[in-house]
Each structure stands twice: as structure tokens, then as C-alpha cells.
Length: 168
Length: 168
Image (cartoon, rainbow over all chains, first blue to last red; front, top):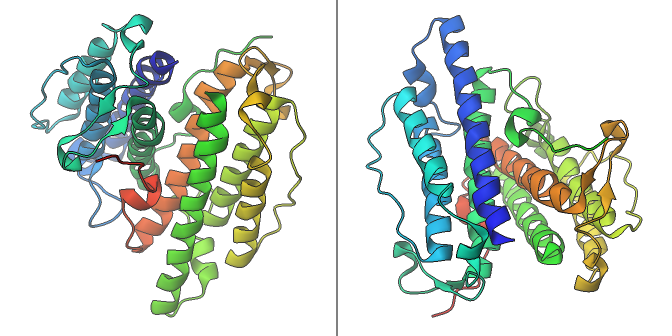
């Protein structure tokens, strides 16, 4: 289940985010503004801009899966300044997630998971996944979406959720 | 697991949303503006306002749990115009969710779930929970948060995520 909730679903959300950013590139061209204007936009003066929202989404996705499975995550320097670089980063996390399988999560529920900022405190893997990682990935993908929506990009819930595996 | 992902975690998010709205009430008083100004705010002209974001969060939470368990959800008329009324609605969904237990979800994964707008198409309960209900609840709670953040309310990630069950 953790594999479905993290690897599979985070991969889907990263692909959705990538597609939304691609639409944003077309929107910037149409409006004749540099894409950096969009990437530097934010909803509040003391909230992270679009570039940072994308970087954080990538980091939470890769670190959540790495911590739940006790594997090493690839490092990223947070030095992206263009959309193309952000797309490369998203793809690198998608590629990393593709290296996992259900079996990697067999001990995830009971694992003790901490993070640098938590000053030695920890959560169980179950708590970490359900209460921290999952709500966080959706928070930052939604915020990236909302920054662009606020700027006028014509996207809707379907762009955020992606395709549903409907049966007739 | 579906119980944890939906009943437990949606209850937590509804409580967090309620607390954020309570902070917003203090903010409106401080700024000497009517709370209705905040409730009618939106991030984009064609996106739902704060009131509607709260109503939708409530609806997705109650309907997701009702559909996964084949129970009836309480009806709400979407006629709230004040914060007090929205808080009553949030509490009514929290109370509804409190009537469920793990056992109610024993057949959720395989259940066929459809919704009025899906024109007869359906998802399995597993797909419905993971790909539709959960991302949607986080989407609308984040959007409600973002509308208020954009207006200047001093809230942060902790208000959104709520307390973590940290162990020392």
C-alpha cells in the first residue's frame, strides 16, 4: 500500500505537475512574458515562489520514498533557474521512483523515521507517510498549481488530478 | 488502511481547516474588515471562493467515506453564508466521520464506486481513495489555506499539517 501511495501516486503527481508547467510555458509565450516571471511568482510575500514549490515537491517525493525504504536519494543542488532545468529535476525524481517495487516497502510501517529539522524526534513510517509525506506532496503541487492559476493560466482540477482509470 | 487514510486523516485536516478559519476571524477583526470579505475571496476569477472551498472539502470527505463503506452521508444545502455556519458544517462532517471504524472498510478496496458526474463510469474503491478522494481533500484544504495566506493571514505549514505524533 505504501508503494501505491507514494511511488505510484507521487510519480503521477510529478507528471501532472510537469504537464502544468509545460502549459505555463505556452501561457508565458502567449502573454509575451519571460517564463522567469512565472517561476518567481508567489501567492504571499513570505511564501516560496513557483520554482521553490517545484523543488520542494521533488524533494519530499524522493526523500519520503528513500526514508520509507532506507535507501539513498539522489542529491539536488536547488540551483535550477529555468523551466527546462526544473523539468529535468522532476524527471530525475520520476526516474528514481521507478527503481522501487512493492517489496522495498515491506518494513516501512514500523521503521523509525526522522529528518534533520526534527532534532532527533521521529515518527513511525506509517505516521510519516500518512500524516507528513502525503499531505506535503499534495500541498506543494496544489500551491504550484495555485500560483499559476492565480496568474491566469487556464488549468483545472483534471490537470492536478491527472487521468482517472475509469471503467465503463 | 483506508480508515486511517480517510476517516482519521480527513478528520485531522478538517480540524486544521477549522483552526485556520478561526485564525482568519481574528485577522479580519484586526484588519477591521467583515469576515465575508475573506469568505468571498478567491485566487482566480474562475476558481471557487473560500466558502466554496470549505464546502467542497467537507463534501469530498463525507462522500468519500460514505462511498467507500456504502453508507449514507448527511445532506448539506450549501447555504452557509457566515463563518459560524461553515464551522457547524465542518463539525457535522467530523461527527459523521466519528461514526466509522476500521471494520466498515473491509470491502472498500474492491467496491465499484461511481459519482453523479461520471456518467456511469466507475473506479475501484482503491483507485477512488488513492487517486481521487485523497488528492482532492488535500487540494481543497490547501486552496482554502492559500486564499487566506494570499490575503495576509499569518499561517504556515504547521497549521495545514497539524500536530505530528513525534516520539523522542
